[in-house]
Amino acid sequence: MSSAAQPITFLKGHGTENDFVIIPDPEGRLDLTAADVARLCDRRAGIGGDGLLRLVRSAAHPEARSMAETAEWFMDYRNSDGSVAEMCGNGVRVFAHCLERMALAKTGDLAVATRAGVRRVSINEDGSITVHMGKARLPESEVTVAVGAREWPARNVNMGNPHAVVFVDELDDAGPLLDAPRVTPAEAYPQGTNVEFVVARGPHHVALRVHERGSGETRSCGTGACAVMVAAARRDGVDPAAEGRPATYTVDVPGGRLLITEHPDGEVEMTGPAVIVAEGIVDPALLRH
Ligand SMILES: N[C@@H](CCC[C@H](N)C(=O)O)C(=O)O
Image 1 (spheres, helix red, strand yellow):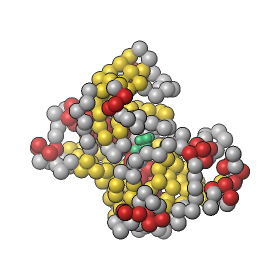
Image 2 (cartoon, rainbow, N blue to C red):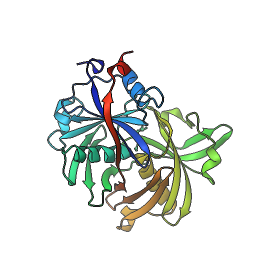
Image 3 (cartoon, rainbow, N blue to C red):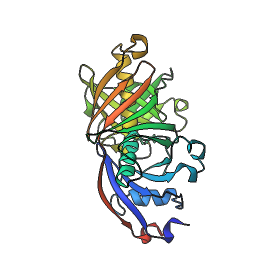
């Protein structure tokens, strides 16, 4: 059934102010085009969001069917320009919170299928949510990020989706980030990348700004915070695999705070909030274009 033919129920939520339009579509009946997603995420003409989370049963989605035995639910994540991304760290917390609120999951543990694979999620008693984000990959490629006339060396970190992590003196050094930073060489990121600018705040404590692929500057990025934690740890000479003990960093984002732990086996765990702020019905006219 086409998305424009029927009223669509939505929720609006955020994780550290990385905000999402959430569309429950358990049986995978909606065909949301990139233009539909961009309309829904438009902050003036639509509902508004950095991205869109569609809740679909894994068994009902061709990209997730193979994960259906381990994870009942698939997070179909799109950026606000309608592009598809492999993973969204803040999104997966909001996704799990939404399942719990809709009585589709219980407090405790659940598995969520994503394009980057299955992620284990724990809904904690205090309302915070912990996600096992998988292992960071650190391709050795030399990468440069430039904004206007300034440029910096960057670390290439992959958390299922791509990141270029830049250490700067001040978070304002990169200016207003109205356009995507230039990242070279282009071959390091064949599908484009998210870019994080990072400053140290204290021992095991950093702060970031992020320009997201497909969404622009946002107030938080969960996968970005994980990429930053791993890059900052290596920069500080901290390597849990070599030391045999986990390392935890506090990562401040413009919209709040995330706690990120890297374990000796390389697994990265993220804990942070998830909030639902509204529910409603989309006027089908919004998607008639
Ligand atoms: N905000 C997200 C990341 C969303 C995807 C990203 N823009 C991409 O294209 O990879 C997060 O919290 O991780």
